[in-house]
Image 1: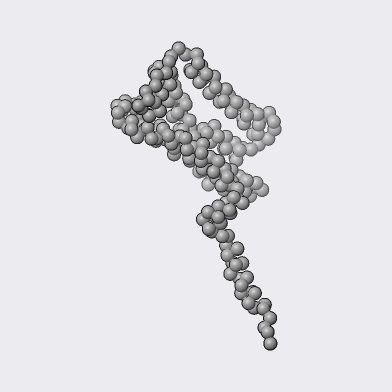
Image 2: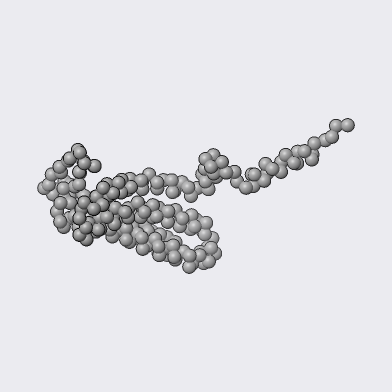
Length: 219
């Protein structure tokens, strides 16, 4: 998600950077391949190669199943800083700067023939980033407080609930994408919220009047 927040600057404001196949591969596909390969190699190494054994306590939430490699001080800090805190900070700054940039350059973007596509992409990516940041930042803040020296007993019970917020991200992302489809939005308004489009309400009001005025009178 952090790279997605950075990449949308390229997609919206610097689309010429990915105008040919080589640039598209270097700026679009290569970063995702590198990130996926790094994550795969890192966790395969930590889980299957490092000599440690997980212990489970079935009386605790998640069975107390923190990965055993996190008991190593270096890997614990690396996991929190590189995999937890830095992506959220990067995504937050990239998202805020993106919204500000869109506002300042909205006049120029509206002149573009692809303004509707750009607007839809902007809304979709902004909603996805907002969901990811809002559901991740409570747990990150508590972990950061513990990292800075706050005793572990403070905020431990609340963090148990915040950890499960992360699972809602993958469940909400499809709805964010689907809501950008205009036909689906119309169906949601009419079938779920019982809100008919304005032109349909006007037609339904005018049609009976026209029928009454056009009916022939029987002599």
